[in-house]
Length: 65
Image 1 (cartoon, rainbow, N blue to C red):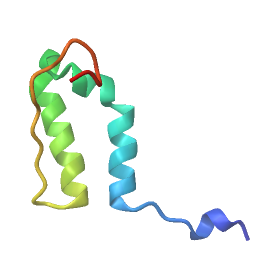
Image 2 (image 1 turned 180 degrees about the horizontal axis):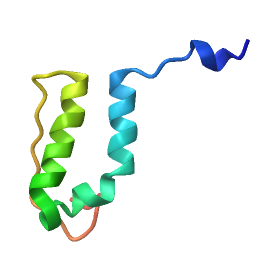
Image 3 (image 1 turned 90 degrees about the vertical axis):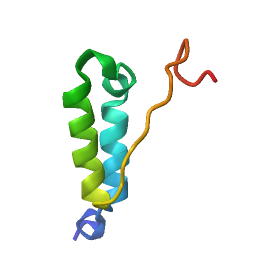
C-alpha cells in the first residue's frame, strides 16, 4: 500500500496551500475586493469559524517593509 494513503492534510495545511496559490490576487485585492475577501474568509472558516484577517497598506513590492 502506498504511504500516501495514510497522509492527510490538516485544515491549516490546506489553507496555506490555497493562500500560496492565490497570493498574487490577494496582494492586488483592490481589483475585486469583495470577491477576494469573501473567498479568503471562506477558506479561513474551514480552519476555524472565528478566524479573521487584516490587511495593511501595500508597500512598493511584496516583502518590503
